[in-house]
Amino acid sequence: MPPRPPPVPADYAIGDLARVAGTKVQTIRYYEQQGLLRPPARTHGNQRRYAHADLDRLKFIRHARELGFALDDVRSLLQLAAHPERPCAEADAIATSQLRDVERKIARLKSLRTALTAMVAACRHGEVRTCRIIETLADHDLCAGDHSGDHDLEPAPPRQRLRKGATG
Image (cartoon, rainbow, N blue to C red):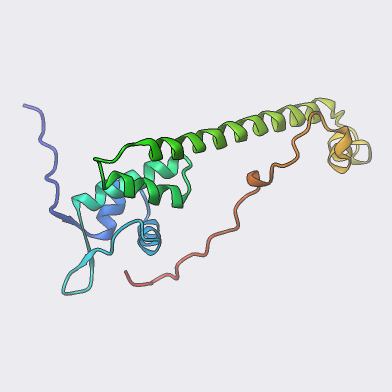
């Protein structure tokens, strides 16, 4: 007889929810602050308690974020999911827009790969004063292909961390 899975708790503490959903406690708190997760019930000791429906909602949010959807799009998709009788044209429009964004990013990344490949191939491993990589970075006209407009590929500013020992 196969082993039985562990029983599913009727409710989760925030750490349990994070573990089961494969995310961080800070992420759950952030989604609550953004209104994507409803404020959870609290125990007499003021601990957050989440229902299985909260876990399902968190998994939905995480999956949408993994696919690159912006928080506003996730919010719209959650609102649509709450009304299953509605037509899905709006969900299709949101997903189609996200697909176009991904395709644009892929095209820019391919252009970047071409430019970087050409720079690396041109490097003669001499001195920096004659380094083709340094020359190319200093003069965009020497670069292979046009990859300007890659501003969305810059790293996002660092997120502020919660203070250690913050309650929640």
